[in-house]
Length: 250
Image (cartoon, rainbow, N blue to C red; front, side):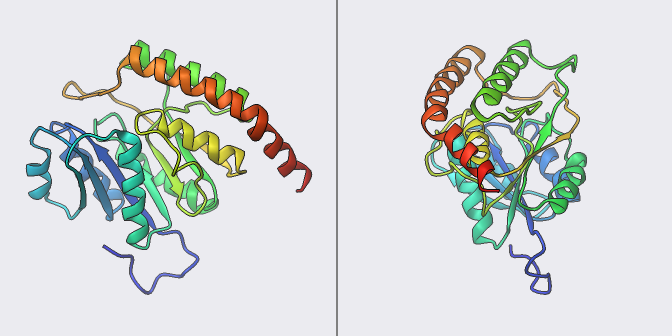
């Protein structure tokens, strides 16, 4: 799974990365619809115990599968997906969740924004007033958005979304990020401190009846709260000074 040799070297080369854990009910639909927008796909099967492996083996569209023997968390799944994308010669990883909440048909919006600014991390922004969005998720997102603004000085409408375009050569914090959901927040914060532009793009959201979410409102909120405490401390001694120095040197 490598990009065609006749592409210009400076042209962004995109690969979809889909982390999944027990999403057998929605995974193939996400894969098919993603393939219609972006043909190169890496699926990271993070130790699924349902029919995921069987479904991927019979996938109607070509995908590269990275398998974990046991569940290791979304952070580890993303890291392995990024590695596979780099090995395939791709410059950008387009992440999309396997639970069906995102519209793969919105990918052209993110790809267009990334082509306009290849150095930027493109962040899909979901509407928080969607009638089907779980209340726990809404509160956790707004809570995270507030502390992200404190830590980085950057105002983003959705810091918890899994629909993003990562410029693989510029993302920061990948090696040190935690293994669970909060890893996506860590990547945003570290990238913002490093001066990577963050660009929100408004996208749609849906919550299908057969959606399987592994977000645990109480436990994961506590984990995000602990992470935000640590990040605020790091921001004082590292993040804010680095951001200020970067502005002075421009």
